[in-house]
Length: 120
Image 1: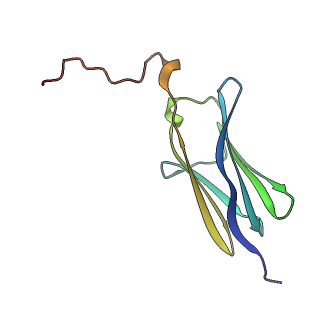
Image 2: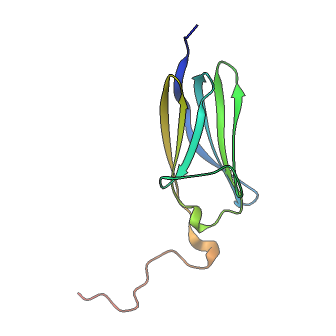
Image 3: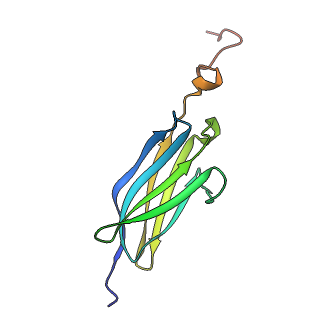
């Protein structure tokens, strides 16, 4: 039969930290039939499943899947707006999550500093 389900997010992306915050895992759950193709991006730039990035999708019961993006050796440049797109022949669904990294490890407070007092 041609019945099926377009991808639907049953859990929006959440962020988990492992390895003292050096590894981040974006995790979401998607219902879809057939299994969806997943596309991750950061600030509208596609993320490839290579290097510091690991992308995987594991089946759950009832035509659901847990979709994950792992980032190793997290650094300040990883901050940004992440998007996951799930597509199959019946449709497409998107979810977004913002990653904010404080720069305390890099030794700066992240606060703006004035080299010159603002003019009043």
